[in-house]
Length: 135
Image (cartoon, rainbow, N blue to C red; front, side, top):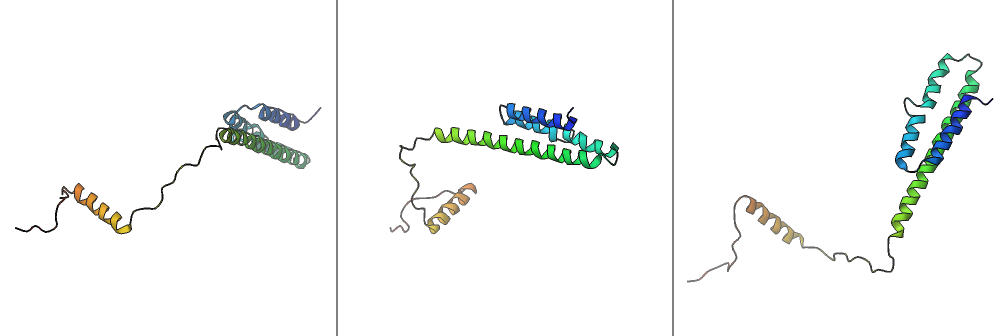
């Protein structure tokens, strides 16, 4: 008869493989590795075990925790890869590149525009016309 931790590992790995999306995978992670998870509960039960069983169960518990964590990371990487490949499949590489803005305004012109914005907020208006008027 296999140890309950080995059964727990097989059950967890089966649920991880059957997860259909990232949300289901996160739910499975919390179920097994969360604060109140099954693997964490076994860690709490270690206190009540006899001294002779602690090294064996502790080693098995670490193996289960590592196996479940590795399986979750692998499955999460698979989901990310599927998402990235789906995004790349929608890109049409035969289209021309998007145009980029070339150049920018002169720094003095930018400062002038900023000063005009500030004065407009204060209630002033910009008057257009000749700088000097003759009679």
